[in-house]
Length: 166
Ligand SMILES: [Zn+2]
Image (cartoon, rainbow, N blue to C red; front, side):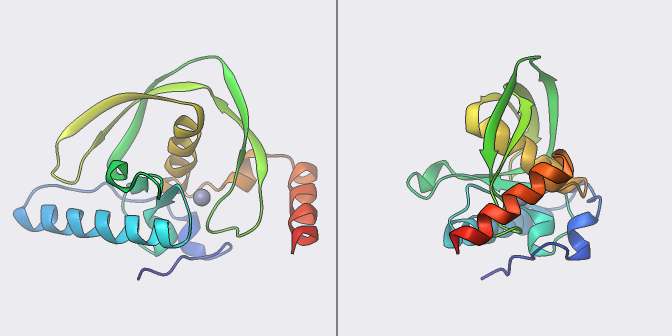
């Protein structure tokens, strides 16, 4: 099982490299990474997991829900094509920050492109929690964590609340 790195592990601050599908070997690796990352995401009850969170410095993340395991998938070299101006302010958590939940403003809807584990380009629209999750994981690939997206006061309150829950 892959190990989840916790903040402030320095790997979480790395800007990840693009994944290159230029050989048969890299497709095999891509399918293995997809499977291993989905297994780890489900084991830790996550709905998203980015490669740097498991110590891999490539542009890939996985998303999915344990109740619908067949819908879980990896997104290689993901990018946002367009966003709406409407903003959602929904609660986020992160496997690298156990127990901390905080509301973060992000676009309500996006259109995104990525490669699947076979290297085929895909395009789709995301809204609600899927949109939020996509943008949260995309941030990880740039070395950005959700703490960076809120004021220090709001963050301090979220940390305090997480300690009360324990
Ligand atoms: Zn995260």
